Image (cartoon, rainbow, N blue to C red):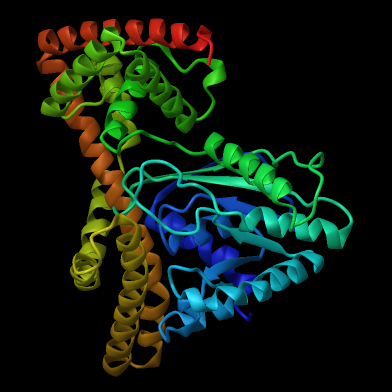
Length: 438
């Protein structure tokens, strides 16, 4: 378990590099026995998210085949993972799970944090899969041995484009599951069932659960329209909370066969297509396009030419490992859950090998000082390139939107009026579904 103490920092660096990550929600205890439960949309990256948000060593339950694979065995063993024997992997080995429960209980008795994904598998479904009972049994068994309940904290991962490098990742830390009132031990079927149901409910509060993936862009646009025109209401909470609210309105309308919701969905999709033609977002229709705003923007971007120069230099140096990573990822399994993991592992390995190779070349050409300087500078340049390319892209996007808003005023004003009507309709439906009995 030599890597376990460093794992939280490595995990935080990896997730923030691969994704544009935001973390919101409650606090996680920094010491004492703890059970973290998360949804499982993204294969090997999900444990990284939980370790990063915990900020402390976390021992995870991992499927047994990982311990027999030479490519992954060293990794899971070095972070103290505990093997789980799933029926789908080998039905004959399921009886060995008694050792898994013992190891988990011993870790909790030693005041460790345990991470588990109760769905039991990584998947691409738009909603949480039915939970297995392992998390509840571990918690109940630990309570029996400790004499008191341990914190069970849900962590929700919302990744709309999880296979895309530098896409958005939202991590929500929920409130601890309330379970002090549940009587029974790990072999009590009723206690296990009740605690599993409460864990399920807690996880659903910090995740986005859709009826179908096709609803994801619709929900995102509906939320953006509402916030652009009416603002985020105080009780709406995080962005994911607002997505969840939009999904609730959509689901309620479908359930009730509401023709107004059907028409609203059609108009939102039409509005989204019109915005896409202009390359705009709902908030852009409310943006200022006066000369003074342009002057202020230009003053803030005075260093843009230098940033672009550094970004182009870095992009040229790292062109080879970047494209090799894309090639490897293109041959990965088609499911998004596995492809993101392949991109992360392959990219990290290829970039490190490339930096080492350039360091050797610099050493052979200019001596050990040149080699050492290359090894020290290139990792910094790689991170700077990533940041500067994004900033440059955002800056040029801002400039394009400014000129578009100045030159197409009439067409965009019609779009803005339609957007206001959509926001008002969303507000009416939100109030109606909020007051309706559930």
